[in-house]
Image (cartoon, rainbow, N blue to C red):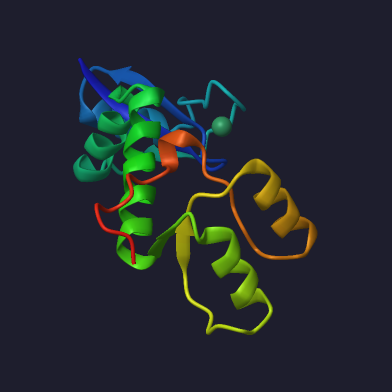
Amino acid sequence: MIRYALVCDRAHEFEAWFSNSASYDDQVARDLVECPHCGSTLVRKAVMSPAVATAGRREDDIPPEKRLKQLADQVKAHIRKNFDYVGAEFAREAREMHEGKKPQRLIYGEASFGDSRQLADDGVAVTPLPDMFAPVPPKKAN
Ligand SMILES: [Zn+2]
């Protein structure tokens, strides 16, 4: 017996057993192999891509909370690399950039809820970060 991963013309994937590959060819030629999802007899062997299949399976094996943490780590690394840390000066810096008093740059830092609400109300583009996405501030602020 041989098992084939098959796909129909509507991209439904399924598996079917055959006594050998000649039997598969014969049954497909006589329209005896039906897609269990839609009944189509236009089926062919699914193209298997080991690299992609393995990567997909590995991804599925990672629990969601771990994937979220990986994502958070990427976000944090991205911010630390591309944004300047301004610490408690964040609200003032953001406002001065918004008002054109300072050149635009990417910054991150701390702000109170009140400050960030005020900035948002004034149309300053600020994004509050959930704790898990907030990078650990560098030892020395700019
Ligand atoms: Zn189908």
